[in-house]
Image (cartoon, rainbow over all chains, first blue to last red; front, side, top):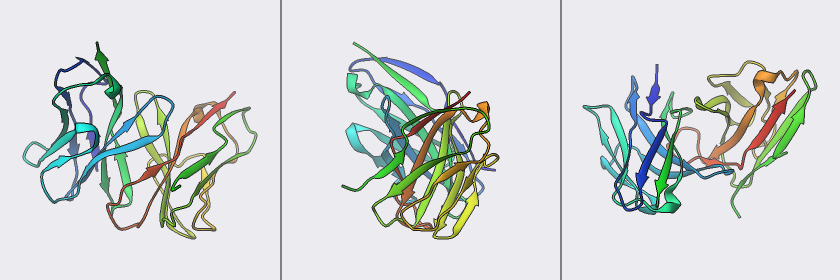
Length: 113
Length: 114
């Protein structure tokens, strides 16, 4: 069975500090992985996706993620947090012939001035 | 503007009263899907549709029905809502069923069942 684990349901960082949001996955087939962001009272917006090309994926708003097969991880990073990054972030796994999507429970990022 | 729309955005109802949440996309997407979002559980897939007249169960289909009579519309039907279906619901679509295209999400429908 496919699954996604996000470690840390709440993460706090200072403005300007490194952002690291963790995502580990379990999949019986080569995975396709996504990070989404959800701002308050809004739907989800795609940040970036890994689809078996480059293992280091760059997304919008300065975020990037690295696919590490040996660690079954796809952690999201940003070198310097901005106040506008405060949101909830979801890691997701595409499987089942690219039709079924499994989401992690989400990580709420708080940015402290 | 390319978008996924949902109606209503907010709904309060009572146990057992049938309701429908509509979802429509204007991008000619093949694939559409419904999710529910609950605190501490993230998003869970309810149903998805790979094309007109083709639907399949996600991870939490109990208590829900869907239909896909037209490509652009994918309504979610709760025949007899119960309080445990109180949740935030999202509809999403993507271009092709068999690919890794980006999913586009609607703004969400907050449902409360009393």
